[in-house]
Image (cartoon, rainbow, N blue to C red; front, side, top):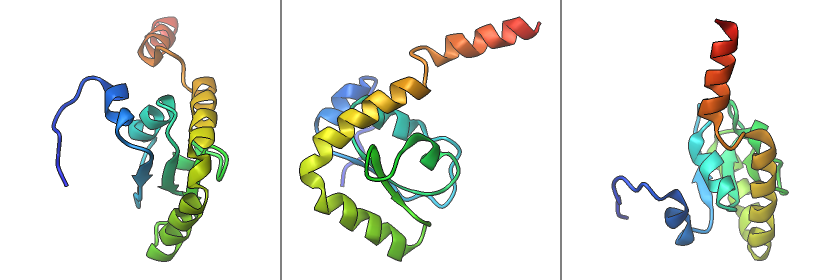
Length: 117
């Protein structure tokens, strides 16, 4: 295992990686999932906090029912059994996340704040 350190070019990271595995017990709305989806990569995640808000199980990624070894193993097995479909699933993930996250979220948020002032 290597830790690459800071990389500013997110798409370059995903050129050499096929999927994201995020087995969190607690999360907010992980940017790692958004980034992977924007780069057309399937995600294998646990059903905690905002993860399932972004993914549709077996269509745009794979969701373990709970953050336990047994459920994570089940999700990994489902993902592996459909590995030939990962490009298709990743493409669907890319389309789905673009409908959920605006191209410039910081601008949208600042405009909302300014609207409140």
